[in-house]
Image 1 (cartoon, helix red, strand yellow):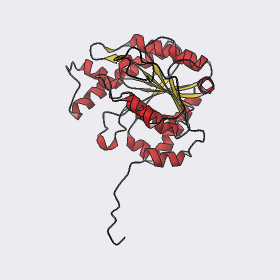
Image 2: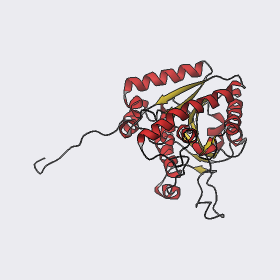
Image 3: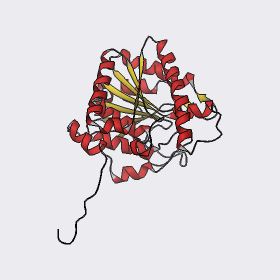
Image 4: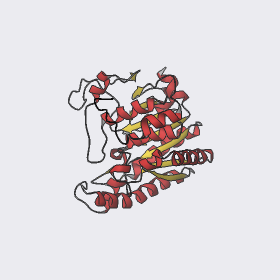
Length: 290
């Protein structure tokens, strides 16, 4: 089952975390981006259709603005994102250009996904780009997003994009190999769980809560993303992006990382959009006479 899901997936969303391609000390890491581009190009050469959800804009902007700490105020975050996003796309364009692959930038907010017409327009745009052989590179539009219209973290955005693009598989590249029985940084004897047929309460407890300077997501957010997109029938692979060649190997041989299996019956796209993209508004009050 695991091998089949990974080796036969055609349309794949690959989420690349900030910590893989950028840091406060060094800014963007072009060598990391080029290495990931090589692996993605190899998958594209196999006939796979790849979409990238990439973090890294704010961290890149922090370096360029010479900030000493992660900004706490929204205008500073947005300024960092504005500076960093252009540098992030330039790095991706340069990395893929040497492989004769064209990329396109798409910036989204939750408003774009919540509005049904804009959601469908974005879906058609992604489909057209893929038909042209172009790799869409997607990020949240942090320069305009406020709390009310933010998707949140890019793990969540990646799950939304997997639904938006009608993908077969979501791959979340991280700085860890996958889900372990315990935190491997605290317990070296912890073991990797390669296959998770269902996300139970016990599995969620293993995730814990974590975050880093470079990003806002931890294993808990990744599991929430996997659970959400799993309802649409899309399985999720959490995989280390630190080791060269692992992405290509995992999707070619079915080995590596932790695979979260999706439900067998795919939820209708509109029903999934209503259940997981729309946010609750208002409230119902029942008095004693109801």
